[in-house]
Image (tube, rainbow, N blue to C red; front, side, top):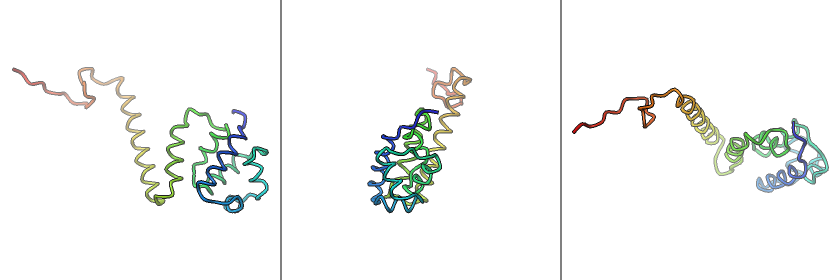
Length: 140
């Protein structure tokens, strides 16, 4: 596990809070933490636990994984997926049902591409278009 990157985490949390148009007190109340403790996290003076990060993520309506990456708890190799999820979940212009549908579509594309990539290794080399079907070529 990487060491906590508390300074960057605090700045990120502050930006997310401002983006959500929440005061420090409002976010602290929504996350179930004290106002001074949240202030110390934002200023990089405290290292929140994964549980506190999860509570903050829920209150900010972003994925906990996004905060875990910022804190250095999660490896960055999964960052792209985490960021996509975080952006979708944090978007105030779409409702919860729309967010869930977008996430399901995103996951289905990832699975489809993952399966396609795995099957590419065993596909028919004459199948140039990756269709899985024989393509008839016109004869002259």
